[in-house]
Image 1 (cartoon, rainbow, N blue to C red):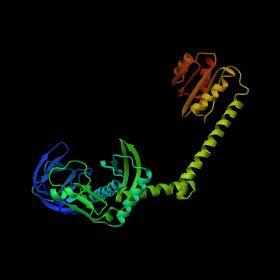
Image 2: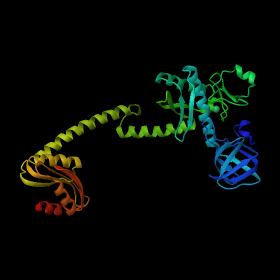
Image 3: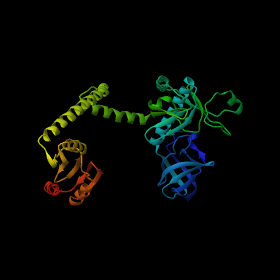
Image 4: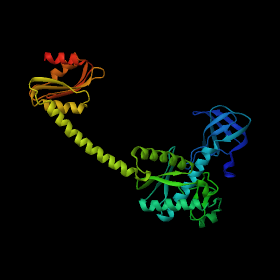
Length: 378
Ligand SMILES: [Zn+2]
């Protein structure tokens, strides 16, 4: 049975221990110490990382009454151990923040926390009922108020008798000694995780988004140092957008909306002008066939132009591109089945593509001269 130092003091960063066993496992060397400050994965909180002697601790998990440290090499004897405390403290901030948020949610809406995940980018909390946007905003506000009050986070080991008088949150049935985490009148919850000493250390709790999940909601949160890093990243983005749009930071969404509207109008005008240009270009075209070139035309433009030309000639071909990059093509006819011509075109001009009897599209890697020469033969 591993002695768990993190239950005595959750701020232990370094300690000395004896290696009880070290065996090669699936994911690395599985090391058991006589005592440890490494928290094993549990209750939504990831396992700790750090060093045992020279061995890197890749993960920490629980097996029965033992804590297993997954290491990248073998260790032996008496070892100096050091936690990656930046990671641990961030986990403590997020974990304690989740207590505050879920506790306040419970007192306002009465729903249970039925899922908790601490991910790389944010944490998610699942509640078994629908929390409205207004309620969420109020829970968020009160959570941050609880942080400003710097409330002590206490651990209580109640007797069975005392436990009966406590009204506490719990995710599952607990056997044996119950460990309660009490945060003033904000939260009382059965929990095996590690927590900061006072709510002030949480820093900030920010709701990112909410989505319907099963019969309730999944709320994404940023808490503590991760929230600060997220703020820095988003602030940089907003200022970059603000500079690009020459708009105040609080007005960037309006500025983007206006830009979208202008783009829509410009697209509409562009498409009108394009049609006018194609009509002008096809004005004096006549005969059995024609082959036009338009360097800047998109595949769609080539099709629209060829379709317009097909009103005037038997077979209308439009090639967009140039000799360096190759050409995209669209060929349209009202009366001729183009599929055989398409095969011949692809064969003669190193092309690919196909289509329906009256319209084929594709691309070729040939020169303008080769294309003209091919169309002279059909
Ligand atoms: Zn906890």
